[in-house]
Image (cartoon, rainbow, N blue to C red):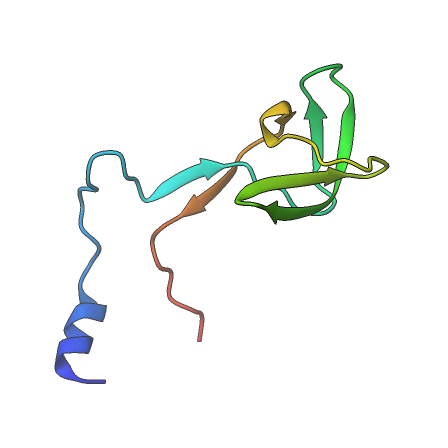
Length: 89
C-alpha cells in the first residue's frame, strides 16, 4: 500500500455530511420471504421474488401471478449505513 493510500485509509470520515445525506438511511428491502401488507384490503402477503422490468421494480407475491406495485405494499424499512466498517481479523 502506498503512503497516499495509507493516509486516505487512516482518515476519519467527515463529521458533517452534505445536505440531504446521512451516515444511515432507511429504505424498504423486498426479498423472498419478507412479509408485506397490501394497502388495499390490508392483507398480509409473502414476497416470492423480485425483478426489474423495464427499469421498474416488480415484486411478486406468493400465490399471485402478476407483480404487485411496490407503492401498494407496506413494510418496515431496513436501516443501512454508508460508513465503511473494517472487517474483523
